[in-house]
Length: 388
Image (tube, rainbow, N blue to C red):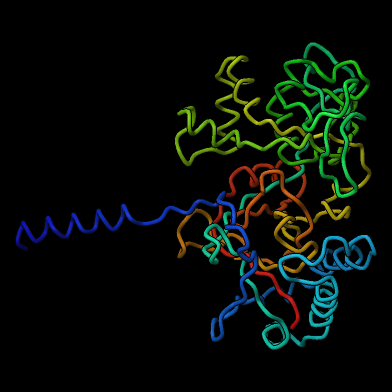
């Protein structure tokens, strides 16, 4: 090949690569842009047929969404993304009937294609370009009901001076000088000891990364020194913006780009100074409060979330309780092996999920779920199903 021609080809390839848009999954939707985009005429819908085999598992989560959507209270959250409350409930009920009445996988898929409209999340680019899926869980951590030299990091109950509306949105901080528009940040709460000694401590943990893990996941089971288990669920948060610890560590060169996971974060924390550790932790202004629970953790519908069947999205964009289908592959390779291909119910709200290009999959309770959740970084499509 002529060297000049070859060099020109290489230069063209480099230029095309440079022009290739890198997905920004944290990008907000343009004002007025729809969060849900119906599939185009002739566009093949995703294949849900194999999920018919898991119908008993799906029904348990589906019935929770139906129960919530039937409540009078639920009507205040509709219409959302162009979906009315009546259509949302009708879709859940019909999906349940199809799941029970279908003769098998193919009949199940046929009925869905005939009766439901498939929508794709607007995704990171507002045009259905794809979603970044991460995962969360309920970790089991070690702790103490009393502070000791080992257990020094408390998890707090919801303070009475944090003012919320009926939907849980933070309205402000009630002080002796009147209501402030924002509740204090993580740094103010922890470094300033703002809540210390007010009787809000539920349990003490030994490791600030364990505390971070509980906050990120919004729930935790604490194994106490006598072997008993204290179950803590989400009670609220301070309303401040969430900043990813992993992203901050990558940006500052503490962890190689693209390598942030729970394992690499723990490795970094073990080898750094306490001052640097808290500097990075306090970059995340968001702070979560907890409450003792019985049973398993609840999502934002106030029903238990289920492993691989509950998903957390931005509830300012997407309809609550809806049937979704997650089709995702680990990493950015569109031809890679599938990681998730599941029917899931939109039953939770993620603290870091604030765009159409992000979603969180709940993976369950304990060490195995924790290890897997720390590794998940999958890209793909998020579909919603509604009857016509």
